Image (tube, rainbow, N blue to C red; front, side, top):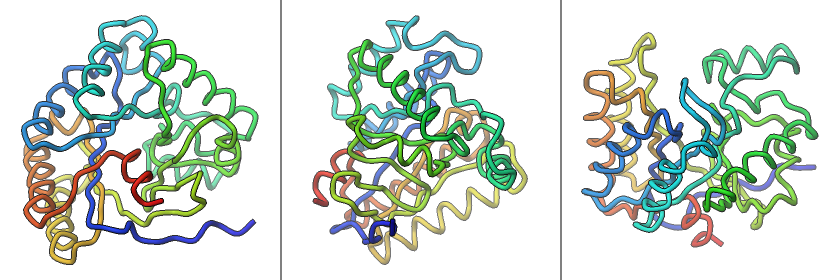
Length: 254
């Protein structure tokens, strides 16, 4: 089957996502949301249902679920971000190499077959639904989705999934080209990467090219990364970008 045609979103839009939302990262999520609320920017919160980073699962922490629901009531969106956010052995060796490079081994869905991918997706949806957080979108950890994962998304109620290069509309059958800018905290070239984020956002703003910014909990623990991300968001807003959630982007593009 041929891949869907790739097109640009119909207007100058900005999507900001907050990754790795879980009980263990709730303080960092709250900090990012404070910044975004002050700017009037709705975010898509990428929620990990299982225990993550040494904390409890979402099912075992009703306070975190309530905080996400309050954020949703303010205009933010909740979305599924894998089930465990932990890499799974197996699959072609080259996919695991990509996993190590792109996701530091956390690409849970990078090499899964269809049956296992569907099992994990269904388990994640069940946890979120029980927490009062029904979702329509999926972002695989590291933006890495195997062919089996992509096949498993059909029939589960998702309207979109995202890769690093595009937002994939499952209902409309097309991909919206929209590059994602993200930090790599603690890695080689961290400061260079931060400068490149700001420069790229300035270029996208000048050319009115839709783009995305991905925020992570670890960004807040490294000097300068928060400032670079907020400066990048500011460039887009100053140029007239309309900030939207993933769900709103897909709906308006249809």
